[in-house]
Amino acid sequence: MSDLPGPPGPSEKSRGVALALAAILGPFGAHRFYVGRPRSGALMLATIGGLGIWYLYDVIVVAAGEFEDAGGRRLTRWDPAEAPSSDALIQEVDALRAEVAELAERLDFAERLLARPESRDPSSVSTRRS
Image (cartoon, rainbow, N blue to C red; front, top):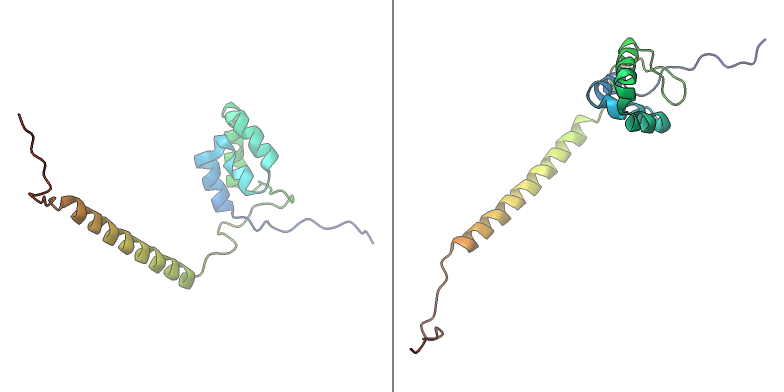
């Protein structure tokens, strides 16, 4: 029997996210940073996607499902491995709504302060003598 390990399983990284990053920010190597390959990502950033050739090659390879992460596993899954739960998203949205409401109240208060005319006391106004 051979003690050689079998082929690695699929990557936990999303092929869809990698393809979106490759298509939009590909010349800057964003998809390579995403899959854990920062050295080639930095090289891609420095050469602006190999003057476009490396960028196009990577978009085709990611779309075909042949792109590999830092562990040598292929990106085959289209959906992200762990999607945030809807309860967590609802709590986050509620927290953001509360923050926006508080900021709106503060802005309204500041506008009212700035719009209020200054009241001048006649005794405190100095008069000039000519």
